[in-house]
Length: 83
Image (tube, rainbow, N blue to C red; front, side):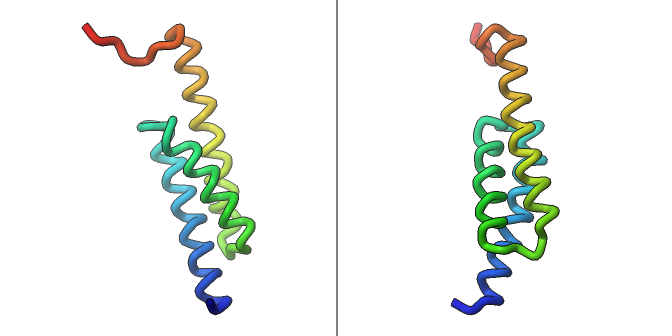
């Protein structure tokens, strides 16, 4: 693969990490948080030109997991109640 193609893919991963981390603060943080962490890390390892977005994606992904932990702690381990 060409260097330009790899950089473009890494840039896409950085943006996806940021978007998933942002959405994860509101919805499905148990899924989007880890995805944001993985994509942000891969983007940084592959040398993205959008380093700031990758770092924001990492921070938001970590924030997603912190929100999940706080929600679980506040609700004594159950988020959803049936019945």
